[in-house]
Length: 177
Image 1 (cartoon, helix red, strand yellow):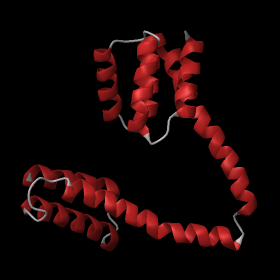
Image 2 (cartoon, one colour; image 1 turned 180 degrees about the vertical axis):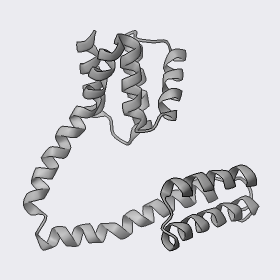
Image 3 (cartoon, one colour; image 1 turned 90 degrees about the vertical axis):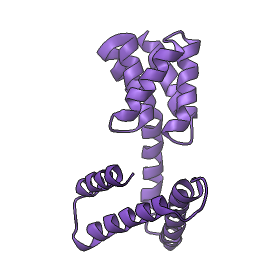
Image 4 (cartoon, one colour; image 1 turned 60 degrees about the vertical axis):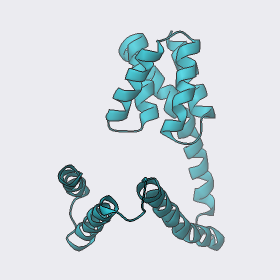
């Protein structure tokens, strides 16, 4: 059983792309095809994994491994899930270490900063503004922008710890929404 868990999660870790939530269908396919758990049990595992701190894919592997084979299953599943990424990062790091001082690498990394920033802002805009039904400008959008503004102000001006900012933003959300 431990070997099956390890191989299944190595395959998932190696061939699944797109982040934690994009990996869930691959995990479900393995869980169903190997008869590890019902769809209902799988759904509950994903809910618990999503609430736990850390990446949902790794949390899911750990929890499913634990449900299938106890603590050893959790360890084997977790190692299987993260091993492909770990090896890839080591290889990339070794390669990057050799070329990091080259001007074209520095220029490329510097050039990527603005596009990454734009992509983050686009995702936020798309999720919080365009995803709303009705007008793009309403009180919920305004309140959200005020919370964002105050959070950024608190982080930059007063050097607040991010946990305080998250807690304050959550409290503001509870009060306002």
